[in-house]
Image (cartoon, rainbow, N blue to C red; front, side, top):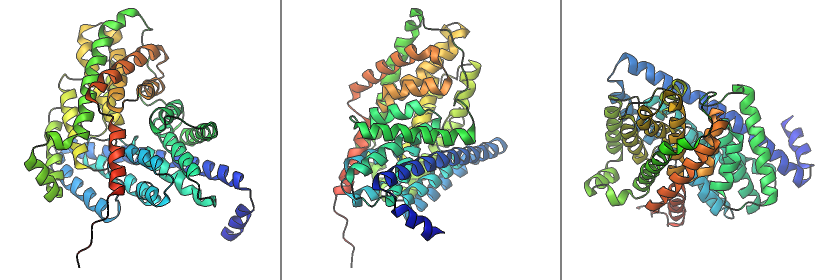
Amino acid sequence: MRDYLLARLRELPIRSRSTLALWLGAAAVGLVAVLLAKAAEWAFAGFSLLQARWWWWPFLSLPLGGMAIRWLMQRGGQGAEGSGIPQALAALAVADDAEKTGKLLGLRIAAAKFVGIVLGLGSGFVLGSEGPTVQIGASLLLGCRRLVPLHDAGLRRQLILAGGAAGIAAAFNTPLAGIVFAFEELARSVEERTSGKLIGAVILAGVVSLAFLGNYTYFGHLRVPGFAYSILLPLIPIAVLAGLAGGAFSWLCVHQQRWLPVPVQTWRRNRPYLFIAGCGLLVAVCGLFAPIFGSGAEATSHAVASGQPLAWYYLPLKFVSLLGTFLTGLPGGIFAPSLAMGAGLGSWFAPWFEPALHTKLLAIGMAAMLAAVTRAPLTAAVIMMEMTDGHEMVISTLAAAMIAASVARLFRTHLYHDLAERALLALQAPAPEKKP
């Protein structure tokens, strides 16, 4: 049967095989995104259950879990570290070199990313699973090029773009945000042919995700007051502060050599396992005072749905714990944790305004913080609109996202693109010689 199907496949025209590869890959991305979301949810639920029973559990699970993930990455997960979006950006830049592209994207890397995310959330690290789905989606779609006997850089680029966009769409159930993200962040200019394939892949991945998870919104259906000019009073300071906090976070992530003390850098270089354990203990300490573990989706969802602000210290503790997780280099995204930080920022202003505006202030802070960290304001605004069914907040969230992204430019850091440039430099560096 397998030989028969392969024979029939080879009889198809190249264009038909290319379309078939795209459809199969997009469907696979939707399925894997659902599996990752569910596995991550169950893993974190297990961690939360153990933490509720034994308050000291994070002091054990975080150091040991972090070291175990590092060991697994070293044994077969090279290329799966970090968020995954920089790797997808770097792969687009070297799409004409199949060997270099394979070091950034591949089925092995996708599998390692999947396992690393689940173990990381099961250990209690502060990370999200949505951003890494970009690298997983791009890897899956790129793997489908084997159905098309073409060594074409243009085809590889189209598959990477479509896979990354489909990953965002399926992970958040936000198809429009997936398309916007591809245009705004993954590629500044896209061919007309690529645009059509990208949209088709996003729709198909979304349909597969919808079939398994149903028609849901990430943070539920919010009902908030419509736009009024009075919202500018809290919107502007929230957006400015989000721009400063998000820009500072990106700067700290990119320029670690400039602010980490030299002894700490030496410790990380010479004792990486102990350094990861130390970062895990830092996250555990922060978790003693606020529910900062995991992506933050649970705490944020409760706050947004109820309109009850988060504690004032949630934002700084989430900031520190997310930065500590990022420093480990373990697989993990920052989309959902950035949204959680934004909810914490919006909570600072909620007590000063009527309760009917609390949910809207939190949502504005979430969109602004995500825009500041990623420097992708359109994606941030559209994601918030689709995740909350908050069409009444379109103008508010878009304005906050644009202001926050503009303020974040003061730090002259573009997190994903700067990290992608480093990934490209690492590809060009000569391999170390083996000692005889």
